[in-house]
Length: 393
Image (cartoon, rainbow, N blue to C red; front, side):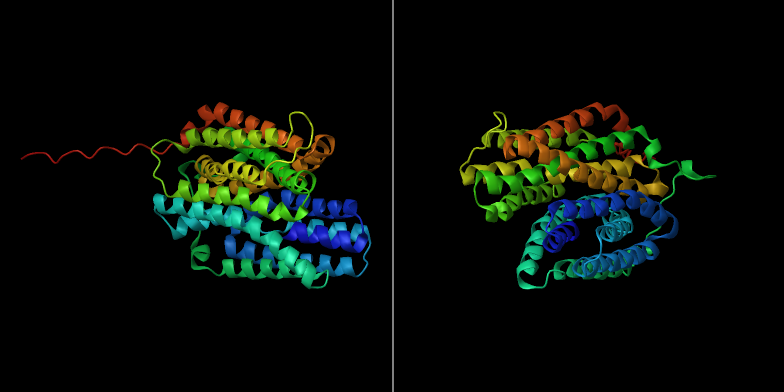
C-alpha cells in the first residue's frame, strides 16, 4: 500500500506523476539500502528489538510524509522523508523465515507454511490496492498513507510480541565457531540465487506495468485492472497452495528452472495475444486473456518459495536473516529498475511489448537457474540412512 498511496497522494497535491515517481523511487532506494543492514542487525540483536523499533519509526515517517505533502512541504523534504521511511522499513519477509523454523520444526509443516506465506503475499497485492482505491474516494487525500502507516505500526509491534518471534535465536554452524560467519554474498550459490531473483523481480515489474497498460490501452477500460491483477495473483495463490501440499522427492533446485520455464511460456503467450511481437496493440477476448494470466501465475509462488528455500540452505546458519534480506533487496531494486524499463517498452510498442520484455527476463532467469545447478547441489537434503535390522542373538 505504501508506494501506491504515496504516488496517488503526491500526484494529487503536486499535479505531477514525475514528482510522485521520484518520491516513491526514493522510498524504494531507501528500502534497498536498509533491508540487508536491518537483516544483519536482527541476526546480532534479535528480532523484537529491531523489528518493533524499525516498524514504528518507518510508520511515523510515512505519516510525516502524508502530512508534509498535504501541508505544502518542498519536494526535497518529501524525497528525504520518503527515503528515510524506506531505509528503516522492517524486513518482515526476510525475518519471518526464521520465525517459521521456531514455530514449526517439522520440514513438511514448514513447507506448507511457506506456501501459505506466498499465498498471503498474493492476497496482499490484490487487497492492498483495492483498499487504497476505496480510501482515496471516501476519505481526505492523506488518509490512505496514514492508514498504511497505522497498519505498519500495528503489524510490526504485534509481530514483535509473538512467542515464536521472542524465542527465535540465530542458528550457528560448525564453520562459524571461532569467528564471525562469512557474508552470505561470499557464497557463489547464494549469488546465483540472488541473480535469478533480480531477473524475476525485473520481469514482475514489467508484468505489473503491462497489466495496467493492458486495461487502458487494449481493453479500453482502466477499471478492469483489478480483475487482471486478480487473475495472475489468483493463479499464483492456487499454485502455491498446490505446491505446499505436495511431498516432493526431488531436490528443490531442480524444480526452480522448471517453474521459471512455465512462467516464461505463460508470459510469452500473453505477449503474442496482445501483439507484442508485431509492436501493435490488440484487443483480445477478455476470457482468453484472463485464462492465460491465471496459467502464467500458477508457477509464480512455487518459484518464490524455491528461491527463499535455496537461500536458506546455502547461506551461513548464523546469518540467515541477512541472507533473506538480500533476497528482499533484489526484489525491491529489481522492481524499481524494471518499472522504468517497462515504461519505455510500453510507450514504444504497447502492453504486449512490455509482456515480451517480461518473457525475455524470465527466460534469462530460467537459464541462470539451470546453469546454477552445480552451485546448488550442497542445498540437497542429506539422504536418510536405511534402518538396519537388529542382529539375531
